[in-house]
Image (cartoon, rainbow, N blue to C red; front, side, top):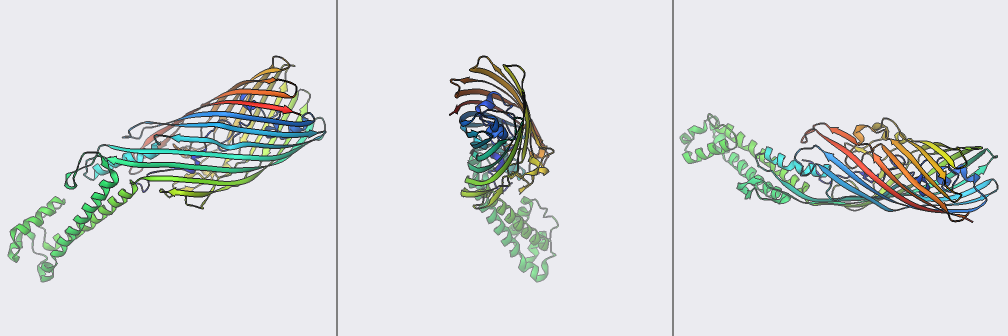
Length: 536
C-alpha cells in the first residue's frame, strides 16, 4: 500500500493549452483567435507577436484591449481493473483571459507596454478525482483479500482544484532602420502564481473479519485498520507470552522433547492440545514438533503479527482524511529581440525570446500529503522560443499569412516529477514543441473584414511524460472572426476558435501492487474573444 493517498503533481496547472508550447501561451489577442498566423502582424498586437513591426504603425498613441473566454473539457480513460469508473472528467473555465497593449510611435521609433497572461490561464476542477487517486483506494479490497480478509467494495470522497496564472508585463522598443527593415528589443517580467486545493476523505470498505466484529458491511477504513492493529498487536503479545512460557521447560533440558510427550513432563493434556491447536490454526504442523521448535514457532509468529499490526497502523494513517491547501509564487525576466522585413506586399516577422530560469516558492497552509513543504522552491522555467512568419497581400482585399513557432522545451525545467524526483525536460522529451499557423483575411468593405485560420501543434514528449494530471497533446485549431472599424481610429475584433486534440496514451507496466493497465487522454477547447483597438 502506498504511503499517501492524495497524489498531486506540480504540473497539474498546465491548464489551458490551446496555443503555444507546454508552458507558454500565445493566444494573446482577439485578432489571434480569429486568425492565428500573427507573426508578421502590423496591428497593435504586434507588441507581442512581432515587436519590430511596431515601427511601421502610424505616428501617435495606440491602445488595444482584449479578453477571451476559454472552456475546456478533459476526459481521462483507464483500463485499471476494479475501479468504480473507467472515465474521469475535468473542466477548465477561464472567463477572464485579458491582454492589453499600449504603443507610442513617433517617426522611426516606437515604444510599447504589454500586459497578458503568458502562461497558465484558468482553473481545473476534478469533482470525482482522477485515476491515480482512485487506484490507490481501489487496491484495498485486493490487498485485504490476499491477506485472508475478504473485501469486495470501497468508496471515498474526493475533489481537486488547481488554479494557475502567469502574468507577463513587458516593455519594448522598435526602430525602423529604413523602409525595409526594423528591429526591436524588449524585456518581459513574468509573475507566476499557482494554487492547489484538494481532499480525499471518508474512505470506506466492506471487510469480512468476524473475529473483530466486521461482517461485510461498509465501514470506515481507518477504523477497520486501527481495530486490526489492536487485534493483531494483542495477538502478537499473546503469542510472545506463549513462547516465553515454554522457556522453563527448555532451560531444564527438555527442549528436544516432542510436544506430544508433554504429559511425561507433567504438562496437562489440555495444555498440550491447546498448543498444538494454536500451531495448526497459525498454519504450522505440530506433529513431531519439539518444545524448542514450538517456542521458536510462537516467537516467530509473534514477530510476524507485530509486523502485520504495524502495517495495519500505517494503513490506518494512509487512509485517514487528507487535505491540501497550498500556493506557489515566483517570477523571472524574459529578454526578447525581433526583426521585421518589409517588401512591398510581403512582410516577414522574426522574434526570439530567451529562457527565463524560474523557481516558484511554496506557501502552504495544509499539506497532509507532504508534497508542498512550506518555503520549498520548485523549478518552473519559461522556455526560449523562436517565431518566424510572413504575410502576403495577394490582392487589394486578400491577405495570406503563415508562421512557424518552436518552443525549446528540452532546455528548460518544468518541475516534472518521475519516481518522486524532479527531472529535466530532456529526460522526458524527444524533441521540442512545434507550432505552425496559416491564416486568411478578406476585406468585404473598407470597414469590415472577415478572417479564418488554422493552427497546428505537435508535442515532443515521451510516453513517460504523460499522466492523468499532466499530459501534453498535439492539437489542431480552427479560428474564425471579423474586424469592424467604427471609425479610422476605433476597430473591434471578434473571434471564436475550436481546438481539437489528438488523443494521447500511456501503457503502464505491472508494478506491485498494481497490474499492467493503459490510460488515454483527450480534451476539447472552445475560445471566444473580443477586442478593441483605439488610436489617438
